[in-house]
Image (cartoon, rainbow, N blue to C red; front, side):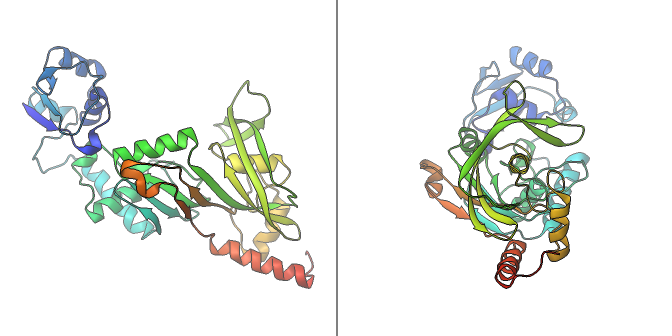
Length: 347
């Protein structure tokens, strides 16, 4: 018999979901059969599997050690991890070392908000990738805030995604309550996310863009349609901040959050992003690539505004966080302001 004590990062989820994480190789039918036969009990009583777990709950498994290990479970107090599990832990360490000391914008017990430089994935695209997700776990392992044992049933992760070549703030859940809370804020749109970007042409006034985004998995591109018969509804509010010769610095609020949303919508408005070769204009991009070395879209997750919050998240209540634009933004602003004033030719 093995007894598992539910910790904070395991509480708040259904018993069957917890068991599926603990014994990853076991089929659902097997787990439900063990629940029916009382080979798995919760707090000494028969359970259905849909019970919400609380901190301190006791889950007893009247199963052999061999059966538990066969299905990927880890026996309490047993130091040796499986080869696959040990490999994952080493991967987190590699990600932390390779990506380095990323700038932390905010951190408390439950949440970490970190600056993601352009060129780093928020989540894996291929099995061999090292992304911000792996960096996060490596960071917490290095600080001693999570153990390899705890990763067996809960894994900290990013809560919002940015494209590889988009820079700025990424919200990470360090604990299960943190992940759940940030997930709710993102879903109900009470957390406001603002981006800064350079776009082609002159954006004259504040406005918004809405429509429906349809993703083509074969090309990894999206298209914008005006009717809701297909695709996901998207909306972006925006305002111009500064005009230059042939482009505008814009601030955009991502009301909804879908992959490629800002790039697609501004392209549809006739104001493609500077440096965006997927949805943008090649000649426009090439000019600034030659002039300043712009190699990817200049899109930066600049500001987060949190709603009123209580309890463990009081320190985020009404908080505004800012992550200043990368150096390339400032280089272009200084160079183009000077060029405008002195009439540098376009060529």
